Image 1 (cartoon, helix red, strand yellow):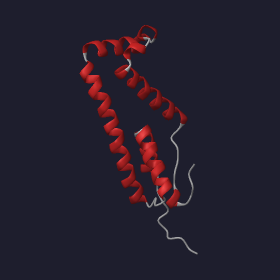
Image 2 (cartoon, rainbow, N blue to C red):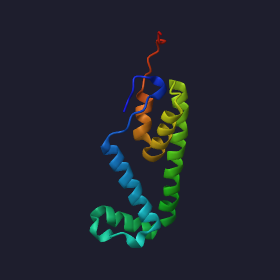
Image 3 (cartoon, rainbow, N blue to C red):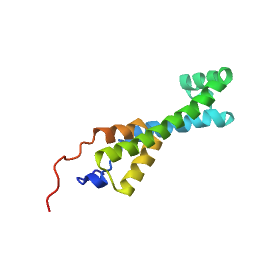
Image 4 (cartoon, one colour):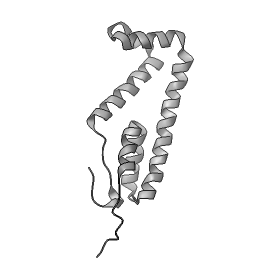
Amino acid sequence: MARTDACAFFKNPSLFWIATIGISLGYYTCVVFWPEQMPFDMLGPLGSLSKYLLENHYPLIYYGWWMAWFVHIAEAFYGLKVCSDKGVDSLSARGLWFLQTFLFGFASLVLLLKYRPDPRPKRH
């Protein structure tokens, strides 16, 4: 949940994005590494496409899987830089942003990029 304190700012993406990205990456992982466990015939057009790509273009989907995770890692490290730029200094908040951006990619990074900390200094 979002706090007003810039040092500890953290916000989760919507449940839609969490489910969509989680299921998609899980499906992709199963297709690449455990295709014999996949019920392609029961998945309609997605199953047909996946089976075709698996049988005819396996190197493409294999290296695409690695590329997807590389992009997520790059986004996570970029998220740390954005945290620094926006004044999110809490180690726990930065760790949460890194982990969340690694797992959910752009859905998390967009929330961090949209964050506008209050530019006025705090009074005591």
